[in-house]
Length: 192
Image (cartoon, rainbow, N blue to C red):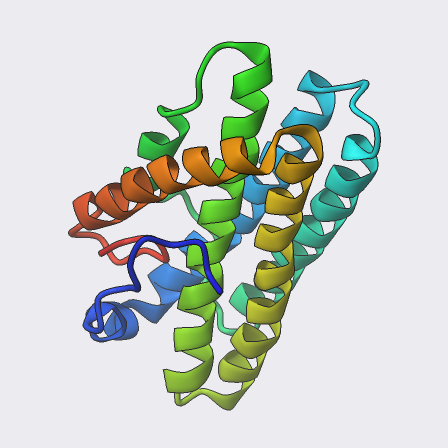
């Protein structure tokens, strides 16, 4: 079960379907950012048993997804370009506490929530896109995103108590839902 406060608005797909090239560019950037986030945690939290190894696997997988998305863009003649970011991730990142210990918990859970929302959105794309190649890709990536959000929550539970993880995850899930609702306008993977 996804650790999200609420499912996506049913109209999200309709709002982004006509902006597929932009959505693909956004997705490509998100894969790069996901790898960067995991790599940053490896640097910041050295010394926690098992954390670096698990995060290094995430970095490799996210960079493989980034490469796949570059291939998708190339095959469709879409140029990777900068996009104005949706405020979604910045709002979530703003919730990370500065204390190194609680900051780790927050970073793991924010990453889990972003992966969970991506998982949900990839499922939607896999089911509703008429382009069979993209639908198949998103169905596959949905499974990998599900594994990633579970991995992040599992890492948090190995370092922190289950109650602390549950309580903070509930708090951050509320923020995630608010951040998603605030991300209106531009078609993005994490827009409302």
